[in-house]
Length: 248
Image 1 (cartoon, rainbow, N blue to C red):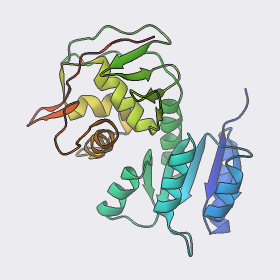
Image 2: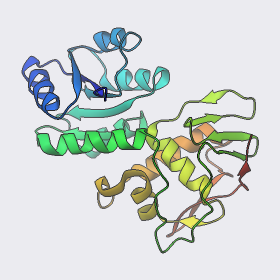
Image 3: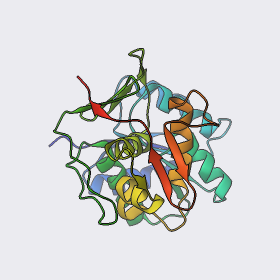
Image 4: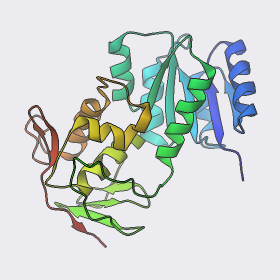
């Protein structure tokens, strides 16, 4: 099996060397980079499955690098930073990060988080629905779902708007939208959505779902301030309003 490629981006050489060595012992192929520019030069030549990105690169805006990465490439993105406040974490998730790790970190935990993100990127068999939520019919492998002219391709992990143009989604956004669409008309709690999209990595009071719903609304809704596709249910969670049908 070809080892999965991880780009490690940090201005501290000791950290990239440490991570490269440790990830190598877990079967990953790594590329050590020390600037956002070097990362952008790597992406079209040898794109990684996942990028570990330090926000504190000298003279560069880590959030801008993350945003550029999300706009042009599909890969996992884990932000590594010494910034531990909640605002930076929320902004990191808003620009498309799949996870956020604060220095100093435990290497074993980091590898576990990396593997969790990579699992979410790879197509996986449907997960059993939590008992509290009525089971929805599981679409066949390779199925496409349609709603209001939109087309969600579950196998290709792609969303096309009514005009046929692809709408870029992060891994987390795709997982959330596919879960909501496959349970259209049912109120889904934040805990259920966290379990389906983040699994055991979800932390108590995790705001990821709220952040991702906000991003999805900006991409799907005519007016994100008055959503008609993904509605909030006070004290309960979220509900996907449109009817969903198989799409060609």
